[in-house]
Each structure stands twice: as structure tokens, then as C-alpha cells.
Length: 357
Ligand SMILES: [Fe+2]
Image (cartoon, rainbow, N blue to C red; front, side, top):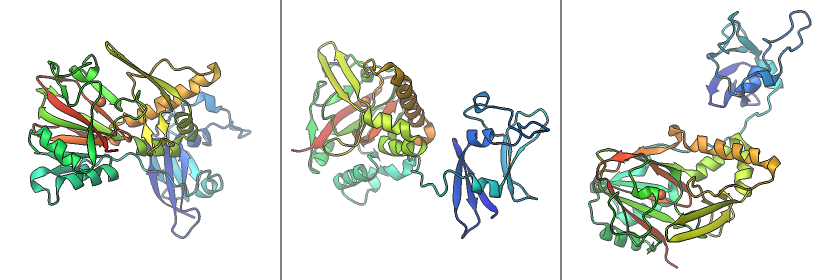
């Protein structure tokens, strides 16, 4: 059963076998392959002379290739003074496969073209387009809409979405010299970077959608990025099920304390059982000190950091810069959003919406 194709991923190697054979493909973690290499054997007894604890958990091979002259796979781990590579016979791989024909959820999408439209070229009414994009992708970026936020609120309102007033006010003027809002003692009103988060996770029902309408771009910086948190959660469940289960089941505390506003809410980060459907609550700046039994704390932090690493990977993000008159609208129950630091008089208007009820 020859190997027909190899597909390297960050965490594992997928090996495809000849068509019509079973399995069609099998996945092997890089560390598993490194540990099970025949390289570290005693020359006389052929016993393994290395323990997995002596090897890195994230080995990065220098090269991987299908052997030309044998029914096998060769991996050069790049650290052998003798230049030897690991050889894995196809039949051995098949016999020891532990993830045959694994159905793996895809990585969070990053195709910006799929979620961006040019207002002047729209061939359908804007309202229904927004609504469908939110359902399908969790966001929409519209270029060249213009500056009239109230007209936009009305268009969105015709889709059955009402403006949700929050402790900031009805419309947030996100600018460093804000004079129109309450409770502006938070990162959004500064020129600092704001890493990935969801808005207002400390509310029992966080606002469902947020519109970010650009009135004036920054001089430098001020780019946005958005990640599909639901896709990231599913992706994590395929890579590391215990980590996913911890984020799905362990409650954490969100605590927002501003000069004249305070809320506390306890919920898991990935909430698949919330009324109205999935919601992710994710906010490093409103996460209260986590409390768990001592022997469980390390595992939770490992899970949380693994998810953070996954969503902070630029390959899993939609990245863009809003120009004057552009807007972004996203589903705050599903998507994480962020912006880079900036200079200049950047001005974005933020409005929350939820279904009228
Ligand atoms: Fe935000």
C-alpha cells in the first residue's frame, strides 16, 4: 500500500494512501513520529534508548518526503550529527495508525474577499445582505458606504434588529478625545492595541451584533482583525479534546469594574447551551482571577493558552483596515475582534444591535 501524498500540518502529518485502500489517510503527531523513530536504538540490542520526556513536544522536521526507492516515509529531524534520517515503512505506519480517516474540523477561515463587499457594486439591498452574511460568516465588511451612521442604523433596523443602548450610550464614538460617551475609562477609547476579545462578556446577554463604522482612519496602525470563535472552538475540539472540554464546561468569572459601572458574570468560555444558541465569552481584560482546585489549575491554563495561541495565529484571522466610510458588522456571540495600536485622530462609531423582542 504505497503512500501517494503527504500533507504536513503544524501539529501533525497527514499521510494519504493509494486510492481504494483503507484507510484513505492517517494522521500522526510530529512528536509521536519522533518518539517512535528507529534512530535512538541500542546498536546491539535494538532497544529504545530514549524516553519521550527527553524529546521536544513540538519537533520541527527539516524535511519530510516519500522515499523514492522504498515503500516508506523519510523524515529528517535536522539535529543528528550523523545526518541520519528516520525511515517509517508504509506497512508499519498503517499497522500503528491511531487516527485513520480522521474527520478534522477545518481551521478558522481567513478569506477576506469572501466577507467584503463594495457598496457601489452591491446588486442587492444592503439590509438583507448584512443579515445573510452575519448568519453565514459571522461578519461583513462594506467598503465605501459613506459617513451616515443613522441611515445605516435604519437599514439594519429594517432587518428586525434594534439598537441596544449600553453603559457607554447609544452610539460609541471610539476616539481618544471622546466627549460624547459615558464610562470611557477603557482600552477602546485609547490608541492602544486591543487584542482579541468579545464585547461585554460580563452581561447575561451580551449585545448580539456590533457595527463599527469608520469615520476617519488612523495616521498609522489601527487595523482590525476578526476571528471566527465557533470555528476555532470546533478546530480545537479536533486537535485537543480535553482542552475543548475544559473551555466548554469550566466556569470562569468576568468582572468589569469602571469608575461608575460594575458587573460580574460566571460562565464557561465556550457556551454551547446558552439560550438562543452558541456564544463565546472571551476577554483578557475582564477576566477575574480564576479559581479552581489546585490540581486542576494547570490544565485549565494550558487549555486556555492553547485556544489563545490558535486564535492569535494570523492565518486564522480576517485582517483589514477600515477607511473613511467603510464599516464592519459582526456577530459578538460568535466572533472575536481586535485592533492594532495607532497614531492620529482615528474615529470609529460603534453601535450594538440585537433582535427586537
Ligand atoms: Fe470590543
